[in-house]
Image (cartoon, rainbow, N blue to C red; front, side, top):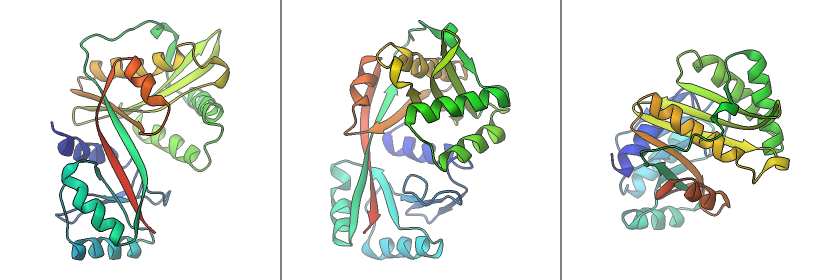
Length: 249
């Protein structure tokens, strides 16, 4: 699976999770969320150069949905011309994601006995409270986190995990399963335990579950400029590419 194929599969994975509607224009794949207008939820994914006319067509489609036009695609030499054209058409790069993949045969299972999978509403509340504290706040995303679990936990399409230490929740992670891909997200640990290995446990436990679910690809993304990159390198992930998000100015 090359990077283009992976990103296409990733967007399929997020259908009915991060966004509610999808439109295939042939030259672009548009996603739309009723819950949130942000770039992460509403964007056009492209895998090749598109014309100025096609960009305008995408603009009109997003405007009809009352969403700011946005694009997301792999950053590579092949996308230089598209990045230049978007900048000429008043688009601004707003994000750059580093995509990491776990390709080792073995997973360090140290600390896995501290992990509990969210299986009841009670543990869902604990998961959300821990996530709030780890991220400082969730805002409108809290409603989304709750809705996703209620809709998808029984099928194991989405799994939430809580790491406990001394009978207290200290870290969380999420695994989404679809089409042979295990996508890991929502990784966070409480400030007072950072540096003690709980983020590693949360991440690698999700990798192990992905393997057990017979996924072939185990991946996550993080801010290309963020501090977490070194952490993912350290625990065994490999960065394979970056992807950029452009929004109409």
